[in-house]
Structure formats: C-alpha cells, structure tokens
Image (tube, rainbow, N blue to C red; front, top):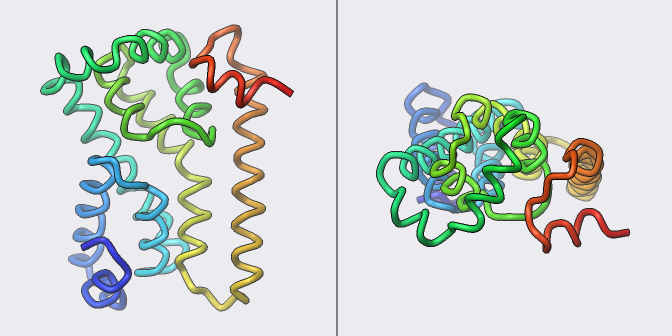
Length: 199
C-alpha cells in the first residue's frame, strides 16, 4: 500500500484528518517492520507538502521506533537477546550514560540498521524516553530531505535534488563530527569505527 500509486489515489489531495491518520498508521507499521523511514518521508512529502510531509513522516518514524522497541522489550526479548547478544552489550554501553545525546549521534550517522537498533535497544537497559526523543531529533534531517524530494514543490527538480544532496551530506558530516567529539572513548563496533574515525 505504501507506494506512489496507492498514496496518490487514497491520501494525496485528501486533506482531512482521516488521510493523515491513515498515513501515520501505515508509515508507523512500515518503519516498525523495518522498511526504510526515508521512503515513508518521501511519500509524506508527495502526499502532503514539505512541512506536513516532514511532520507526518517524522511522527511515523518515531511511532515505528516505539513499536519495535516495545516489541523487543516486552515480547521478543529472548529471541532478540539470543540473536544480537554482542550488539546489545555494545550499544547498551554506548547509550547508557548519556542516552539522549548518544542516540542523537547514532541516528545522524549514515550507518547501521534502524530496525536492529530499535530492537537491540529495546532489549537493553536503555531508558525509553531519552531514546525516543534523541531518535526524533536525529531522524529530523533525513526526514526533511526526503520529504523535500517527494514534495514536488515548485522548485526545479535539479535544484531540489541538489539541495537534498547538500543537506544530506551536511547532516552526515555533522553526525560524524559530533560522534568523534562526544563519544568519550565509547565504541559502537569495529566496522563503524573504521568508517567514521579513520582519516
């Protein structure tokens, strides 16, 4: 259902409350199951406009994060703990002391799986509220970028794509800079360290 054709015929142009609720419900379920949140943001921009599309795409991503987190914490703990035991310990150590700041860093970095992060943190000792607020703020740059791409606002497509690329590179560089500055000796994993720390 979450494709341009279906969204165009069932949601786009329907400015009522029902269309917005349907979009957020489907977007939350999609991101909660691991579909790319960037795609949901793109469709939000396409269905509504850049402002409302960004807001509803962000809301969908946060609700999807919460779905996966609470599934892991209360229903899937044993299965996820067995499958991702090393990741749980590593991410728990990384997020535990400054959950909001470290979550913000993780969300801004162009590495890792959104779904696996949500599931692993759900099983860990990480507090929910700082994790969700850090996720929301960290999701914002890419949500805005992809809503811009999907919005079709009256900007030349080349300019719109160029602007999105510049914003994406800028948010990525900011994430890498903050990670290098604020991690205080904590590590995510060797692959991430090589990608983000080595010159």
